[in-house]
Image (cartoon, rainbow over all chains, first blue to last red; front, side, top):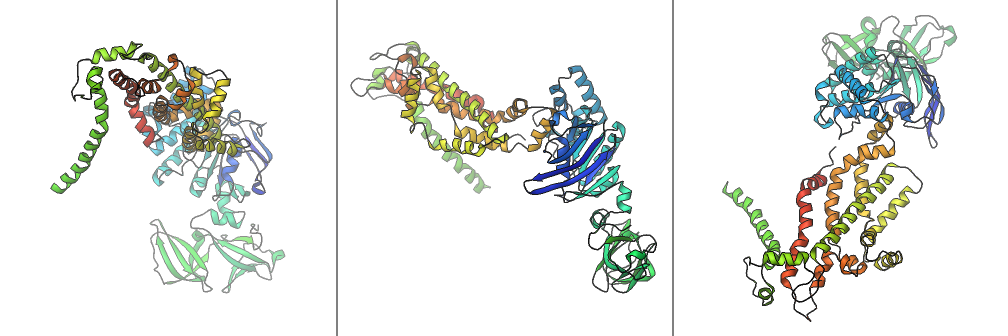
Amino acid sequence: MATVEIRNVRKSYGPVEAIKGIDIAIQDGEFLVLLGPSGCGKSTLLRMVAGLEGITGGEIAIGGRVVNHLDPKDRDIAMVFQNYALYPHMTVFDNMAYGLKIRGIPKAEIRARVDKAAEILELGRFLDRRPSQLSGGQRQRVAMGRAIVREPAAFLFDEPLSNLDAKLRTQMRVEIKRLQDRLGITSLYVTHDQVEAMTLADRILVMNHGVAEQIGTPLEVYQRPASLFVAGFIGSPPMNVLDGRIDDRGEAVLVPGGQRLLLPRPRPTDAGRPVKLGIRPEHMAVAAEGFSIEIELVEALGADTVVYGRLPDGETLLVRMAGIPTVRERDRLTVAPQDGALHLFDAVTGRRME
Amino acid sequence: MKQTRFIDLVPHIVLIVGVLIFAYPIYVTLIGSTWDSGTIGRGGLPLWPGGEGVANYAQAWVGEAGDRAMYTPVRTMMLNSLVMALSIALGKIAISILSAYAVAFFRFPLRMAFFWLIFITLMLPVEVRIIPTYKVVADLGLINTYAGLAIPLIASATATLLFRQFFLTIPDELLEAAKIDGAGPVRFFIDVVLPLSRTNIAALFVILFIYGWNQYLWPLLVTSSGDMETIVTGITKMIGTGESANDWHIIMATTVLAMLPPVAVVVFMQRWFVKGLVDSEK
């Protein structure tokens, strides 16, 4: 168990900068999720922590020890890969024991550690099987077993659930969470799935184009997205974003179509400034006055209903309502944001305006 | 129903006829090895076994001479051929798997240049480089030695390419997992790459053993003493140029014996051979 510190870490491939200076200190026992779209650099960052990619600039320290120039095997980490990366010709036992054997750990202790991991992961019956004789979920558990037996300072997960089907993914997600709670090992977990991020993470690092857009707890990231990118990436369906302008007295936002939405607190210094206005679909409700929309599509999800409406100026507005649908396509509806549901972003930089 | 029965039958008939055509000369050889030389020499070889089989094989196996000429005994030639074929097959596998490992898994300067150099040697068969090769082997004093027989034939671009293609199908993550587990390049090779390659190795062994066993031109050049005779060149030397009558019964017995090791290798390794050709066990 240990802390993992990433200090101004950069990665360049020739002239292309893939990671543009990431700073984060991961606490002992913390579960950090690296979240972002494909190509944002999250896997590269994880592989730099693992030692599988060189570090162009900055420092990575595991347990207070700078590991920039250490081989992966000397970094005291264990990694779980997306495609499991089990040795196909070894039994489940040998797969888990391999790293320990190389380290010269006595046979009896290897046996004990593997048995313990197999018990935690309910793999006891499969120890003599080959990976090809196991299902996807079982293989993923073996991959985790291989990580556990090492008793490393940190676990690194590289999209470990992406190859599983939806049902198994939910199940394994819960197992990973339980396992991490139980073992309390510092974990870095790469995913592009916001549900995995929200449910697993102590903190989320949202990445885009090699930059940390936001670092925060799942609820912080949801409630106070630091940028338009985070706002659009977290939450399903995504947040509505409208062009707007703060009125001359700094008390309200004017949106095209004549709506005037009062700000929670006046911002006289921003009077007249163009902004992007974000409102989550689930924070819209039917109201006496507000946005007038024509309903284009109704998605009934059972527990709730997503309504795709069109504003008079042609923009789409999503509204999420609880329960089964009470409206139909081509109905007209008036909706308004709930109190405190407005998110303001700078129209140019896309950063959140507090 | 009748239609499909008939259609099923046709390929079988074609195959059986084909097998008979291919097997006939071998059958004649087998029968010939059981008659005395007089019967064969008169051209009236019957299609059923004769009674001289045991005597012919015994004479061929240990005999230093037939009825009309001097020969190297088959047991000596078989041993020479076996040493040569095994050295070539195992040597080729060892060299090519190592060079393929280097080309496939390591990043070093001029990596692709080396790869292409290996590739280009595909275009230079033994026959083309035979004079310089002979000169080198002769200068090294390897004429009439096992080393001289085997070493020049060991370098193999084909096997290197086959192994490289197979190694490229091993996922990068496996290498990375091994790195994190603490396996260095040598351990990864021994613990992961070799076991995963074993079906390929078996398939190649069959092909290369037969290739080595059937070598003709090179052993002919590089051996001159009877002690170092290989069986394939030995058989041709038994057949005279027309000056004298041949010991056909001994030649046929020797030929049958010469077929046995390759047949044995194919039969024993067939399971692995087929597996190596059709799947990569991943």
